[in-house]
Amino acid sequence: MSSQSLSRFLIEAHRTKGNINADLRLLLEVVARACKSIAIATGKGALGNVLGNAGSTNIQGEAQKKLDVLSNEILLEANEWGGHLAALASEEMDQPHPIPHRYPKGNYLLVFDPLDGSSNIDVNVSVGTIFSVLECPEGVTEPDAGCFLQPGSRQVAAGYTVYGPSTVLVLTLGDGVHQFTLDREVGAFVLTRSDILIPQDTSEFAINMSNHRYWEAPVRRYVDEMLAGKDGPRGRDFNMRWVASMVADVHRILTRGGIFMYPMDDKCRAQGGKLRLLYEANPMAFIVEQAGGAASTGHQRMLDVQPTALHQRVPVILGSKNEVERVVGYHRES
Ligand code: AHM
Ligand code: MG
Image (cartoon, rainbow, N blue to C red; front, side, top):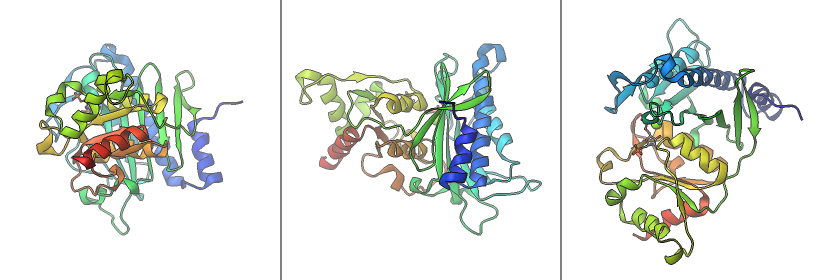
């Protein structure tokens, strides 16, 4: 069977299935092209003088890495002139980036975490890009931050890339989840898995265990029961993994199942959680649900959360459906 490129996949989604239009097709092609450039930059490592801090901080008060800044610029430059976007927003920018007046405007809003897991850059562990596509509210020509405050259920597409041993791009258009692997010789993303399904049950969990004493009772109960293994109420052993790059942890779950949690805890309570709703939690929740999994804050389906701020944070629990439902059940009981 001949291999299918991302371009062909998108053309067929447009022409045959009709689930995207020409503008959305262009948008996704452009994001994928920008991700190829980011893959090249991250791949150069110390040789490209891209490691280390940029010497600046972002709106969240986090020190920006050189690659955070570079990846943000790559995505901005690639996307602002194509005529498919009304505005862009990013983890690395306080406010949305308007489309310069010299370019035509389109109807979509793009929001992204340009380089997720950036604490892993300098130690040569997988990082990635997360993106979400929304429609610009009708009649708005100069979108502000308020235009981005749409629940995740309104996303028209979402995806992420992992810059790991290979570069993969995982995409949903609301019609299943598909994985493309970058063919470095040809310079094209090639379809390598379609209609990905997350197993409903799992024996693997991902959480930053060092926060154990800060967690709330339901999460502590859930994790403690897994740690008790064969001797506890679950009656079997569990395995733990934590990459500290959400993209890599979620990708493992899409590959062999599992549950990922960055729950509410006493350390992040004041800011509402650790991970960001619009460009981390929502795109991943859309992908995970489309792959048959579940995503919740512990109290509410992630995709139903009504955002109130561009850089809003939320507790995140996602992955294999039966395990997510168990944690949500423990929240309900408490
Ligand atoms: P970032 O977007 O600044 O890289 O932060 C998000 C990352 C996630 O990828 C990851 O799950 C989490 O932060 C790791 O947090 P911790 O350092 O507590 O393990
Ligand atoms: Mg991130």
